[in-house]
Length: 111
Image (cartoon, rainbow, N blue to C red; front, side):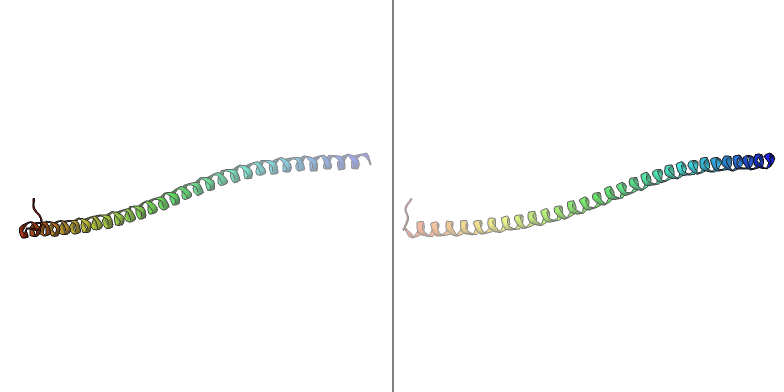
C-alpha cells in the first residue's frame, strides 16, 4: 500500500512541477504580450501625433493662404480707392485752377 501512496505522491509532484512550468510559461507570455502592447501603443501614439502635426500644418498653411488672399484683396481695393481719390483730386484741382484763371481774367480777382 505504501507503494501506491508513493506513486500517487510522485504523480502529484510531477503534476505540480508541470503546473509550475505552465505558470512560468504563462508569465513569460504575459510579459511578452504586455511589452508588445506597450510598443504598439507607443507606435500608435507617435503616428497619431505625426498626423495631428501634419493636419495642424495643413490648416495653418490654408489659413495663411486665405489671409494673404484677403490682404491682397484689401490692398487692391485700397490702391484702387487711392487712385480714384487722386484722379478726383486732380480733376478738382484743374477745375479750381480754371475757375481762378477765369476769375483773374475776368477781373473779379486781382492779384
